[in-house]
Length: 137
Ligand SMILES: [Zn+2]
Image (cartoon, rainbow, N blue to C red):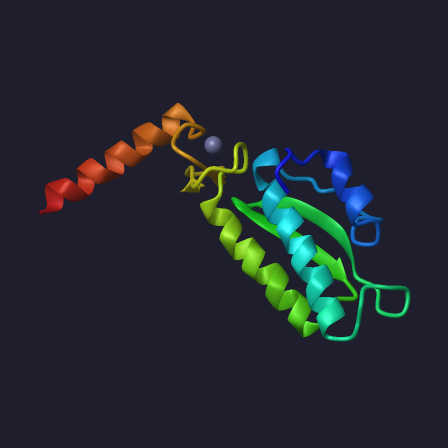
C-alpha cells in the first residue's frame, strides 16, 4: 500500500477483523498492522478456513503496551497466533510515531522510537549508561 494509511481504512478493508476494535496505536505502526491483517487473511484462505461467520477472527483490542504492539484476537487458531506474535515482536524495532527503524526507549515509560522521536531525557539516560560501561573497561 503506497498511500498513507488512515485510521478508517482498516475498517473499510478489513471489516471482520476490526468490527469490535479500532487500531489504537500510533500511525507509525499502521503499515505493520495492515500487513498483519493481510497476512492473516491470506493465511486463513490458504488453509481453507477463510475469515467468515463460520470461522470468525476479530480483534477485541489493538494497542501499545510496554513499547510493543499488543493484539488480542477472538477466534484465532494457533497459526493465527503465530502470525500475530511475529508482528508484536517486530513492533519493538519500528518507531510508533513515524514508522522508521527504532527500538525500545525509556526507563519508566517504555516506547518504540527512532532517534528523532526519542524524548530528550531518554537520550541523556542512554548517554549516562554508555559512559558508565565505558568506565568499566
Ligand atoms: Zn520516529
